[in-house]
Image 1 (cartoon, helix red, strand yellow):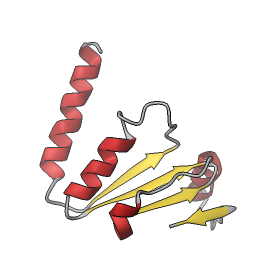
Image 2 (image 1 turned 90 degrees about the vertical axis):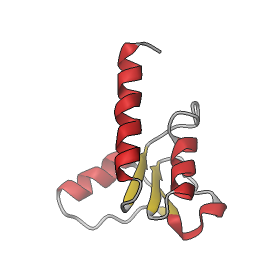
Image 3 (image 1 turned 90 degrees about the horizontal axis):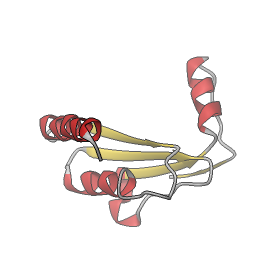
Image 4 (image 1 turned 135 degrees about the vertical axis):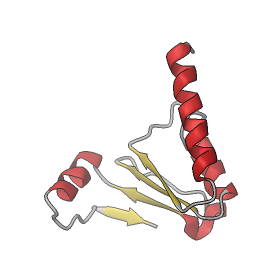
Length: 100
């Protein structure tokens, strides 16, 4: 972990600190399972700790939201490219399988 990583971490921590009392939507887009400590677990923790934070996970392999987060978290199984393309063209997107 070099200087660039530490600078990014500092920006991230400042953002979290400055927005911890606001409504925050954490988007976990296409995150794999190889390094959960970098994105997934911190997002779960923030969603649990911050009163107005919510988490939405979108993953082609079927993401999941921890049950303990209740209605503060949801997951959509979808191809992220198709989802973003539909959003850009303002089409209604219907994922093949959805769990919230």
